Image 1 (cartoon, rainbow, N blue to C red):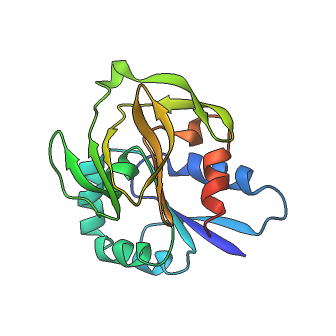
Image 2 (cartoon, rainbow, N blue to C red):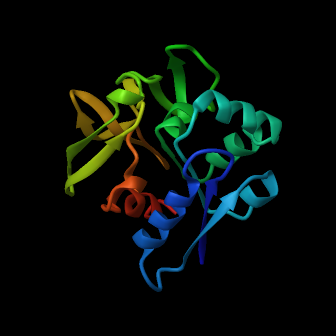
Length: 189
């Protein structure tokens, strides 16, 4: 049985846990667990970093001594970051600049779509069809490195990107009914 950890320091980690269970379906052998320590992370085959507030998440990762364990984990195992999780996986973060894990060759601008009042729902086209995408104070991916692959765009900007074993979305698929993003991530385990 494969185990997917959902970083449970901040953000809607419970919604990701439920989305993983729905994406896996009955009898698929996937277990979702909450991760709050390096010891819990060691039991996982993949990790999801949920949305939340990226500077707060980086601070909590430091306080819980999880920065280096997550970097090491990401060297061999898949990580999927949504919204703030995408910011944490980026190589470069702006508006304002902040530290990150630097596991993907992307540059991200924080809160680039605007304030909370500018949050919105959109329809996204991707290779598998179309899905609803929930953007909440979302970042914009401003640069995608040569090794990364854009899977979906919104308003001319990449919003779903993969690089090797890692995946980011600037939207929240866990808040919509479509489980395509989570299923694709499970395929990387």
